[in-house]
Length: 287
Image 1 (spheres, rainbow, N blue to C red):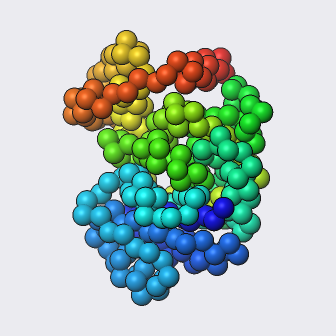
Image 2 (cartoon, rainbow, N blue to C red; image 1 turned 180 degrees about the horizontal axis):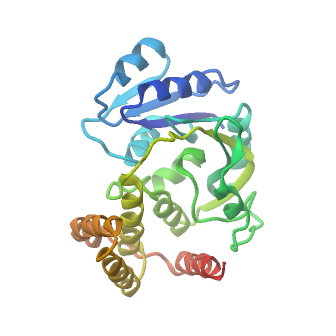
């Protein structure tokens, strides 16, 4: 099963160049698609001049994580690995991921082990995924999970597109959770597979918008998929925090602006996925 790589990027040309240097040197020699989220820097010129073998797709506006869906649709490989412009795959990992997907037909997406920074330290999410209370079903190669890191995921392309890819309403920030829910709702498995490794060198600079985006999308995901009373309670809790918390206030504004669209696009989870989500939430509270 051949693997293609999709990268969504915006205004980070030099970081993208470092990532492309590594991806184009992999022994698997995967085809790479870069989806440019309406960059204002020299991203498009850099890709065209320095990486002529990389396919570049340019969007007229910033689509956030949904740009990854555009890239996956443009590929023809049965497996799609997702990188960010500051992450790449360890040599041999894409071949391992393809083998796991080939050998486990229900596996829709695998979450890789993530090594962070120049020293390759373990991302704290690795331990969380490895300890998933959902256990390890016999037909999956690792613990079943309902979350992952977007820059360290490899998907069966047909499953990813069947689930609709990344939801366009969320943009960036905890957008992976909704995709994991939608894969599970369609019968696909999501598993943590530490034998597949991604390297992530995130920017150390401030990202003041990210906490706002994460809080907003956590509540919007409830409105899109979870029971309505739960979504209402979590919105009320966010509103209560917004009285004294600037991040919560801005997140609440984002929720309210998108709420009509969320209600229009709402598709409640089937019982098996809702039960799994509640099991995960119960385990998190117990910790």
